[in-house]
Every structure is written in C-alpha cells, then in structure tokens.
Length: 390
Image (tube, rainbow, N blue to C red):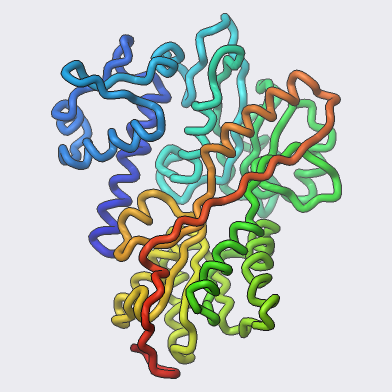
C-alpha cells in the first residue's frame, strides 16, 4: 500500500472515531468540542489532520465552528446528544424505541472503523428529530454459511424480540427470508434480496450506476475494460455486471471472458494477484473498473509496480468509492459513489412507516449512485504497444 493511501486510511479511522464520540455523547453537555490542540493531545494525530477531519464533520452537518468561540455540535445534535448506546436516544420522550441493526462482521477491528457501516450510522443519526426518538443497537454476524443470520444471532444470545424494529444490512439465505415472512419484529432490508416475496427494502440502483460508468468510458474512447469484482452470486453484483455490459452490447461490443476477474476474497492481495495474472496475458485493454475499495488498492499497486500510467496508459474507475480512497489516490479517481448515508436515513424513515402502518403496502426505495469524474479517466492520447506493457 502506498504511503498516501496508508495515511488516508489512518485518517478515515480518525473520522470514524470522532463520529463515534459524537454519537456516544462524549463531548461537553453544552455541545462544545475540545480545541484542535486538545484533540491532538488526546488522539495522537497531527494538527493539520485534526483540522481536515473537523472540516469533513462540518460537511456532514455534525458540527459548526464559531469564530473566536470554538467548535460546537450543531444545534439539533446538541439537543439530542446523551450518553447511551452506539446511537444515543433523542430526549423527546421518556422511552425511546429500540432498533436493532444487523450487519456482517467488519473486516476491521470495530464497526465504527468500517466506512460502509459508518456512513449508514451517519444516516441513522441524521434521521433523528422531533417524533423520532430511538436508539440503535448493532449486532454483527461472522459466520452465515452454516446456520444463517438468525440462527447465528440466536447462538450469540441476541434476542431480536427485545427490539421495536430492525434494519438488516446483510445477505440473507432462503431460510432467513422464510423466517422474515413470519417475523414478529418490524424490519427493513438494506439491499434487495433474491426472493419472489415482497419485503420493505431500501437499496442502491446498482444497474444504473454501472451503466453510468460504462457510458463514461465509451464517451472517452475506451472500448476494452477489465472488471475486478467480488462474488457474482450476489444479486447486487450481477446487477452491476449486467448494467455495465449493457452500453457495450448496444454498440455490438462483447467483452472477452478474460476481462472479468472474479475475486475469491475482496482484498487488495486477491485483486493484485488476479490482476497480475491478467497482465501476463497481454496489455490489450484500455481501462479497469474495480468494485470495492481494497480491490482498487490492489490494482493500483500492480499498475505502479509495472510503471503503467493513469490515465495516459490506462483509465481507472472505482465503484463503491469511499472518502479515504478517492482523496488518497494519485491521480484522483473517477468513481461511482454509493449514497450510504442517504440510504441510512431512508431505512429509518421506512421503519417508522412500518411501525405506524404495519398492514400498509410494502415498498422498495431505490437510490441512484453518483458518478464523479476525475483525472483517472481523462481523455488523453493513450500511448500503447499492442500486447505489451507501456
């Protein structure tokens, strides 16, 4: 991993830590944060890193800086902060609702360090206010292969019946879906399941997001991309692959099978190994699309090792871009960003609808990802030698 990427990943951990401290109500009762100097001493980061992190929290709407006075939680957050569970209760009534949040166990050390889960949590936080008084309790599942999600939770002594509602952000087996058909606890799924039964769902439009990425490559003259991605047995991944291929097929371009690089694990090591194997077959492609942050790091490392220039020799698009990655890569990466915090807000909104109208119509809400064009796909004269590295 390059020094720049490693530095920004460490920065992401700082952002996650500060958000968690805000969520947990650890700052002064008047809503004032420690000074930059005090945060440097308490957290062990440089002052410029602390300042950059505070700027991002300001963009999140969590804090406001008052000239000559200090940094404070935003007025609505100050009213709602108190010491409680991971997301504390809004103090507008005596008894807040208890919501469960079920997610895959993160690859990082803690839930709050995972950028995907952290952004969903940010969305949960933003959705609170008058009439929405709740806490969030997180339950993570490590092994879903043997017993399924709900059997695993039972084995871990997690009683979902204590919750007033739950948000499920984890792939579900057929057995899990059958359980949900008769589940006594109102719930919302974050992500569309493979089922003929209708469930309340908030999801991202993976098909259109991938279409947007493909059309952008075609607009810049790229006709032969390589795709690096995880398990295509998941519905959302199949939607991405289908959406990406559609614009090419419309032009009569069928991508060769060797350009689809499936990873056994979504890690930088697995991506680097698979992409290195593809390079040995010849440098006969003009772009790479990576799905996930760590696979992107793996591909970037291989390109750097082989002196392949972005975008002069090859274009690169990252799908599922997180702040720590697109800020650290050089050149800045064109990316398809998932609106995870917005999805988190909609999950809470839909859960309240399910509580208020348990027999109402079941809906699916779909949020479109955003394509942000940066230097990694700039239209340049691409110098290439057929079948060779540049």
